[in-house]
Length: 396
Ligand SMILES: Cc1cc2nc3c(=O)[nH]c(=O)nc-3n(C[C@H](O)[C@H](O)[C@H](O)COP(=O)(O)OP(=O)(O)OC[C@H]3O[C@@H](n4cnc5c(N)ncnc54)[C@H](O)[C@@H]3O)c2cc1C
Image 1 (cartoon, rainbow, N blue to C red):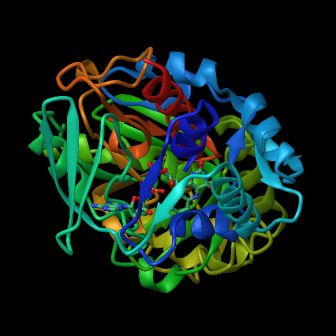
Image 2 (image 1 turned 180 degrees about the vertical axis):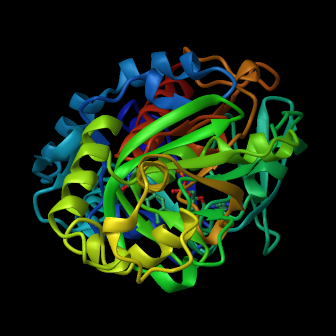
């Protein structure tokens, strides 16, 4: 939509082809229905892919300020929240979609819905786009922005990669990103729904590949929540490479190990007759206590804490600060917010978003091998790359 508007603003005759009965379905589910449509801290370092620097030019051409100004002009008042996340003041994702639909119509983009593009060919300097019903649409420039594979029910089911391949482009391996992590541990069903604030790190052997802090939610399969989502984008490639990544959960991340040890020892000294399982009430989430104790190797949870040895207290401290949970995998595409991988950036000119292989073909959005962090960065990439592709497609 941004690409279409940007090209139309520069005088091109634009047709937008959308397979669904309406455009922009995915926008409605973004940001839990509130649409976190940009982040004031967006820059290329917030992206993952073979070459994150590829994103620099597009992000500069249409940055988060330009995005907020663009939407503000259409009526969306920006509200900046924690960590630079920006939402519409209305708190409704539909506002973002509504104003885009308004502008598509207002500036004269021809929108064709129920138009599934199933084949693209280039004959001379014309692109022939064949739809599923046999209709052929032609044009001298083509912007391919069919999204990735995440949340296929919104229309982005990965078919766009086949279209890119059919035009000679290469696609990297693809993995679900910003998604729940499935972890080893038979206890997970018991603690489903528990939410804590803590830190998680993704370990490959002794090396921490990433560390994130925030709300962590237990599910019957493993963990979710923004910090877990953030690390999930690293998991697919690791598992593919035959590695066995481990999630380190730091439940108590506000105290040093020594402070936590002293706190527990003090707590146990003050009420030595309390059972082990009761001794943590008020400090650790109650549903987690028996699980944490068993994971720390305790079998008799009714033991009075006065009997604990220094080594046993240390074992408890270990679990609370360094719980190691082997990663089985990630949840799959229907649960993912973004695609890790995509069309190889080396085949696209970052100054223009034009294909280096097929003159007149441009790319925008998630189809490109760039995945942003959680927090408005993926929509910002879609807007920025779309804006630049539209501008260059209309003017080059
Ligand atoms: C649940 C969820 C929440 C999210 N929340 C946020 C958030 O708050 N902030 C953020 O920055 N990002 C968020 N994202 C990510 C963000 O929505 C995407 O990265 C972004 O929408 C990608 O834009 P796109 O235009 O490249 O692709 P899409 O938005 O997927 O759009 C592609 C369009 O192409 C159409 N299409 C596909 N193939 C064809 C075809 N062959 N013919 C015709 N049409 C076709 C699809 O139907 C679709 O409408 C979220 C994603 C999900 C799933």
